[in-house]
Amino acid sequence: MAIPRYSRPRMAAIWTPENRYRIWFEIEAHACDAQAELGVIPKEAARAVRERGRFEVERIDEIERETRHDVIAFLTNLAEHVGDEARFVHQGMTSSDVLDTCLAVQLSQAADILLEDLDALLAALRERAEEHRMTPVIGRSHGIHAEPTTFGLKLAGHYAEFDRSRARLRAARSEIATCAISGAVGTFANIDPRVEEHVARAMGLEPEPVSTQVIPRDRHAMFFATLAVIASSAERLAVEIRHLQRTEMMEAEEYFAPGQKGSSAMPHKRNPVLTENITGLARLVRSSCIPAMENVVLWHERDISHSSVERVIGPDATITLDFLLARAASVIERLVVYPENMAANIDRLGGLVHSQQVLLALTQAGMSREDAYSAVQRNAMAVWNGGGSFLEQLQEDAEIGGFLDQATLAGLFDPGQHAKHVDTIFRRVFG
Picture (cartoon, helix red, strand yellow):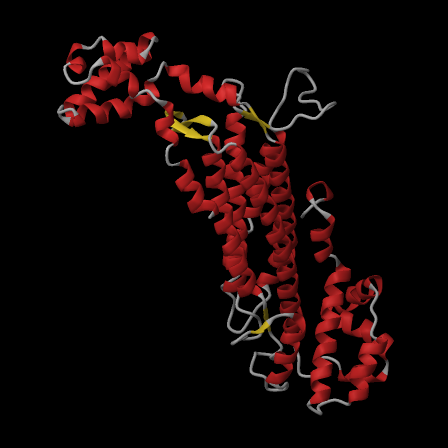
């Protein structure tokens, strides 16, 4: 279960008993309003529910210890306040009408907060990407130096990924926001479909087209799968920062506050604890995905095998993702960047990162690709093994000299070659 250390108050409040029962009350009260308009129950009864309707969490818990049924316990406590008119509450409804509609409201509320979290992270990524649009940094594939890129492009890539996540979450929110007030097996046998339509409008939901007795759980599976993808994107960003903070690289670093301690044993340590924390929390969010998918498969019109799962993963996944997204935004906002170390790392291999330019120039000059690759690799491996300057190694190679003069070779080592289309990519990402 989510714990205070990794919870933020606004998201945690969604999953409190007070909020849950408040939503239950609204569902029942709106249903009474609709029933009264249809002439099914007296208008005075609907008014009494609105005016005198109250609940106490402790009292509901007390009743439930005897009834072993949370909705009945709630209705009993509500009746204690409403009085005789309470007999008209819950007319033609079943418990799942209340539970599933409430969960739809809670997940919608959670999604709204998560969308705000994504907006904050996107804003931080965009600002830092613009700041470092042209800051050169080595690109790595398989963890090995490849060719230079820019730190701004790294961050722009993460921005684009979270922008896709935002679109997915908006779609998932829309898909989860459905209302079911359809009775025992979803046939509306004892309640008018217009009651469901009224409750849906009042609660900011859409009527569920077919609710067997529950809202189909494919909707919930998609919602939690979306949260899992967002968590994975956050972990990818966190892992990138963790790698860049490694002592051998030290290209970027989490902000280290005055008075902060990195190790109980080694006073010199500055560890990437925030991004490591994001990595761990992302695992928890993803762990909700498989149970949510298994919840899709219920017996016939319903069973309650999904219920216990959702009581855990609903709060846990949303509270945890809310916390880790806020943490990620803070990390990016305060990230310490070391352009001089980035430049030094680019030069660390003596110019080997420009090997592709040499390869292409040789083919343009008339050498076969196979021979050009062999000639460039031969000189590159000599630098790998013995160090020194890749350019000087190439300039001393007679075979290469037959196709490219020394000045042409030197021109191929222009680092600006790798940033010439950065603005184009930024326009694609940011408009």
